[in-house]
Each structure stands twice: as C-alpha cells, then as structure tokens.
Image 1: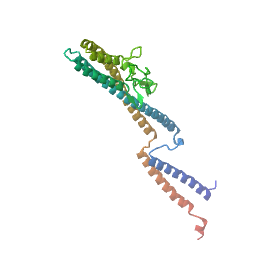
Image 2 (image 1 turned 90 degrees about the vertical axis):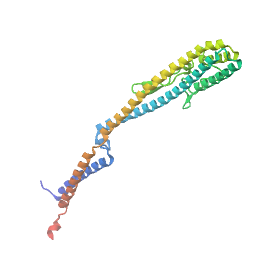
Image 3 (image 1 turned 120 degrees about the vertical axis):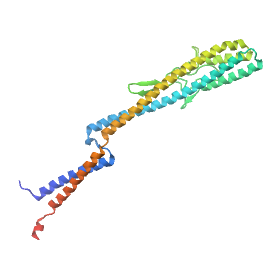
Amino acid sequence: MRITDNMLITNFLNNYNNNLERLQKNQNMLSTGKRISRPSDDPVAVATSLRIRTDMARNDAYTKNADDAKSWLDITDTALSQLNDLLQRTRELAVEGSNGTLTQTDMQKIANEIEQLKAQMIQVGNTQYNGRYIFAGFKTTTQPFSETKNSYSGDNGVIEFEVGAGGNKIAVNVTGDKVFNVDSTGISQLLTVMDKLKNALDSGDHQAVSNLIADVDKQLENVLAVRADVGAKSNRLDLIQNRLQDDNYNFTALLSKNEDVDLAQVITNLQMDENVYRASLAAGARIIQPSLIDFLR
C-alpha cells in the first residue's frame, strides 16, 4: 500500500486529538475531584450514585422528622414536669390545709392558691408546639382545656412521625385525656379534684381536705407514669438519631468512594499524558514540516 503525506497527517491528527482528549479528561478530573462528569464515563457507577443519593435524601427526611419529634417530646416533657411541680405544690397545700388548727382565713388563702394552681394547670394543658396544641390529639388547632369547665375538647388521636425505612414510626404526642385523667363522660378527674379541694378549703372542712390528699396522690402518680412513657420514647429517639447520623456518614463515604478520584493516580496520569502530548506535537512538527519546496531550494 502506498503511503502518502495525507495519510501521515491524518493519522497524526487522529492520535493528536486522542492524546488531547485524554489530557483534557484528566485535567477535568483533577479540577473537579470527580471521576464521573457524564453518564457515559461509567454507566454502572452513575446508577450506583443515583441509588446512594436517593438513600441519602430519604435519610435526610428521616433525620428532619426525628429532630421534629425530639423537639415535640422535649416540649411535652417540660409541660409534664411543670404539671408535676404544680401537683406537688397542691399536695403540700392539702397537707397544710388538713391541719385542724388553721383558721378560716388561713384556709381561704390556701383555697385561693389552689385556684391559681388549677388555672396554671389548664395553661400547661394548652401548651403549644409550632402552633399546635400538644395534648389535643389530632385536634391540634383546638384548645383542649378551658378555664370555665373541666371537660376535654381534644381526642385520643396518636400523631406518629416516620423515622426509618420500612414504616418505622414513633408516636410523639400524649393526649390530654391520659394526662388529665379524663373519664368516660369527658370530664377531667384531675381538675375535678382541684375544685373539690378548693371547695373543702373554702368551707373549712379539714377532714374533707385530708381525704382528698389520696386523690391528689393518684393524679400525681398518673402524671409520673405518663412522663416515664415520654422519657422512654425520648431515649429511643436518641438512639434513632444516632443511627441516622451513622447512616448519613456511611452513605457519604460510599458516594465518595464511587465518585471521587484518586488524586495521586490522576496527577500521575496527567503528567504521563502531558509528556505523550508534547511528544506527539514534536512528532507532528517533523511530519508536517517537510515539503517539496524544502528540497527544491
């Protein structure tokens, strides 16, 4: 086969473009730190990256739900702690009011404080988180308790947040019927006990006040039991948050391993490709430069 100048030049240009393309690819990987810039670079790796990114997005959503659930439980625990303190103070006053040596004036002063404690309990029962009543069940926009009556206006709906794959959910709310011991008629026994205690103090009935101490203790035990349940959920949520953080770290490591370049290897390849590129330019100069005119001089 006859070799012509045009064949030499064409082959040179093809090899030159190939060398330049490899050089550009390595320069691009070095500047971006990524070995994949388009799907054709590595279709399998691109598909893997898409799956990892999907898992990371889902994990981020679970993390946000877990953070929101944690905040809800923290607000609930704070409210229950306040309610516990109010009942403790109520018990102290009841014990004091059962003392038969108190005057009617003293009993009236204690009754006034009991009334204020009840009003504060109702405020605690109407605690809100992010504009939602935490003790109202599904009726988060409805105030569950009123100062004019002892009934409960919420429901027993359980609010759950999804915090893991496979439908892993956790209930974050405690309904007011459990906290305030609402009976089948919809009346809060806790608030009723507060009214009975106030009335007994107003009437100066020391014995009735003494008998109500056991009812106060019963309500106190109920609040403590509810608070213990909230604490158990909060502990579980801490474990869930730690697991989600570990998952996020693992996903990030997998994505880096799948997409990031080995900088040392890329720098080595870039130097080699640069040497080859310079050599191809030198060879091209030798091939293209000679012409018939150079020999006719």
